Image: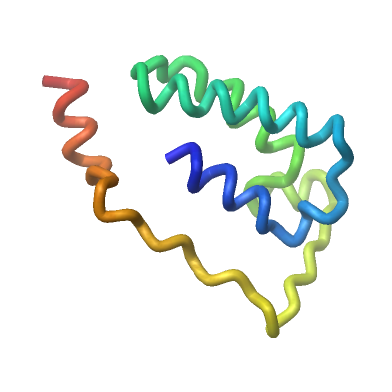
Length: 98
């Protein structure tokens, strides 16, 4: 999940504007994201959401930040293909909740 999350940020049209300090901030968020998903520390996700929102993760975030992201039609990233060894989120939830 974190690899896909990171790939989304890395290939975002906004990524070209990120400075080294931005990437360091997102790297810390990636560690929290990974800990949440691998260890079930779901309380970490509130910090991940807060950090992601600072970079315009959702349409609401981009509106609040007054960001306009123009994604060219050519070269548009295709959605990440899910690897065969990644379990479905519902089976993960079932294991965590019993």
